[in-house]
Length: 547
Image (cartoon, rainbow, N blue to C red; front, side, top):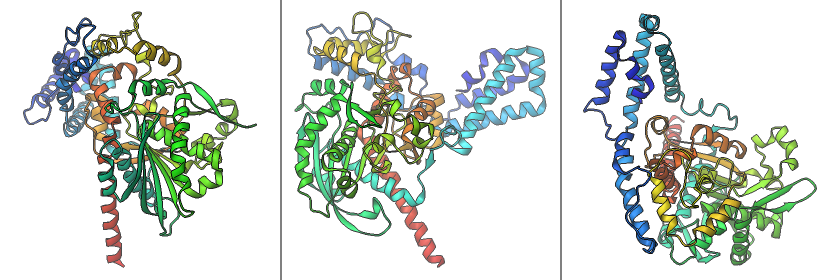
């Protein structure tokens, strides 16, 4: 970090800086520092030559063996990728660098250096000063300066934490439970499983639980029986579903009209609509069989969350807005891609008036649904909430293929993942049809809907990931911030940048998978929610003691 920032090789011959160079070299080589692996070490762990292969697999070898070889290659580096510069080390380096630069400026040494050596050191020092100012700003003020261009970005207020964090964490656990042995995990959090099934290759689960309505809306304690419909995302480990067929349906992302009137045209992902309509036929009886006082919640991880929103909209179309606003408490989504859009001409007035930045969501508004009926949560390094949008970093995997139709990411430098992915797709019989379908339909510009929430790590961890090295492990959640659906994706693209080149490199690819996998929305969220609960209980006790 510091060697690159200060470009020591160009400045090492300047006498007045030699003392500082030695000081930072001592830091970088200190045995007390928790720095085990650098990017250079990672590069040397695996072959990166253009012609490298996973092994000498012949074209008739089973695809399963190819996946095993690829997994072994990734396993070789995953622990090393996670063992990078620690946040405490980076914070120490930033503070030491800032102090050193300040001493040089105060003593006038920098002026003498520039006069003696020309403009190159001046530009380097200016770059270093700006970099340190940026880092110190994050350390001092957290995320506020990073998101200063996004007016809707704000922390979840204390009065809303039970609704938007504690209760959401419960449904995050439930959305992950459906990938596992669901009944024991659902029971642990007070949900009784009513039914389970699979429709259109999507796993689903229906539960009943006793909830307090003030955890969803209102301020008065009101117990109610709540029926929750949980939808699973794409599960590559489930051998009982047609995974290739489901993947093709997911990539059939062409927009089709879902709703039209004289003011609005709402469009939806074609493949998701097909799945949702089949799911609704299967699940609607569990909605119809509820008592008048029974309330409903939809929840899901990944495309399960996207389908949950769509089921709620289909329910609005079939049963009417009154039924949904009176009976559906919330839709919770976790790491879910957008699948809805509205023609620009049908919404120009609202955008011009700035209503999209506030409490209004035009897509939900077209159905007379409030923005607050959908709560969507994203890990900031999870690429899937950017899928099917103009900010999608994954689409170029399909769009940037070689003339052979199998070599990915032909633009740019050689990458370790290139031969791995090429070998996998060469042994996938369905690749040509998937590739052609995805090429023509995957690149879209759908928009997020509802209230959006970012599960943010501590700022020093952000600096470590952003400026130094990639740590694949899901970090502890330090804060939960809300942001409008209109500003979510531009903000992520600016602050938590996931470019096509980055995501095709092994460390970022591994981090992207881990930060999307359902456990990223389970244990870290529950731990943060539990800590909030403990702090709130402590503050309540202190308040009573003062009274």
